[in-house]
Length: 138
Image (cartoon, rainbow, N blue to C red; front, top):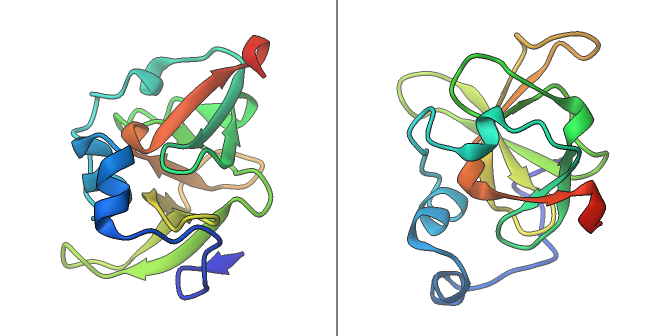
């Protein structure tokens, strides 16, 4: 698994990102913001398909690993192999594992060790950092 200290395949300036992202996407993906819990339509979506990075389109999660964690954010118990990079986040007076797109480094959310079997992980992801492609569109 990559860490955010690695070089990413896609590198853009803040201005370039602002030209292609909506303001709320830029805040989360590039400035490590967090969307308000319960605001993402992806939180309670269960159609079959693939969730990709909202910044670069890289496939990150599939619908078969999504579950309702009750936290207010879309949650997954695993990711597509090689899709996620991590770093240590020590904001808000705690230490958490931050997850990023391994292709562009976009901030997605955090991963916790209180998820369901088989991994025991909970990828708690900002829906605004994702795009969804239903299976019929893939």
